[in-house]
Image (cartoon, rainbow, N blue to C red; front, side):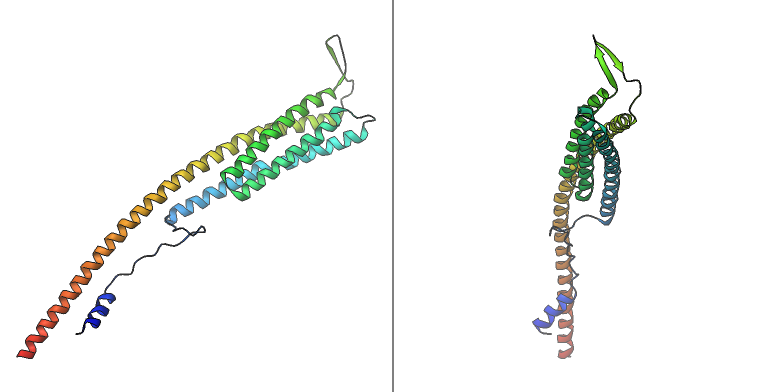
Length: 236
């Protein structure tokens, strides 16, 4: 048997080397299927939570702005409490837009932008509540406040809606900051796992190379025995 035939035979006995698949970033995807499924599930939960926090902002902000527009149209003169619901409702709607954008991006920095917009929306709602309270007051004399005989229903609607939007802004700020913190924590853990997985992959490859050399040695020993046996047969 020639050397070329021996080489072909040894190659035929080699076990196939597993090649790691690549992820979207072009890096080897070293995560097990269970980890991928768990990550997908957690991302779906995060998306659902962010969307659930963002949608009420659109509803509350729209009601607030609509009440402010009607108040401004009915008022004979420009008053602070008539325009306060317009810009506070606009801030709440913009906050909801940041929430939808963060749900699409699913990144820690995008979610932190939602947190910041929630804080801004909270400040705007607090200022708007203070201004809307003036719409319920008739006049103030010697430190005594006299309320109006008949409360304006639009002012009450705007005031109550702004108060609810204020509560949702607080909830959104707290929840989104916790989600962003958890995502950053998972990214750090994932980075450590990736380094550890690369080391394990190198060790596994070295183990496979060792097994491959042992198999090649066995094949060569068998070929040598067959060659010796064939030589003895020709002598006989």
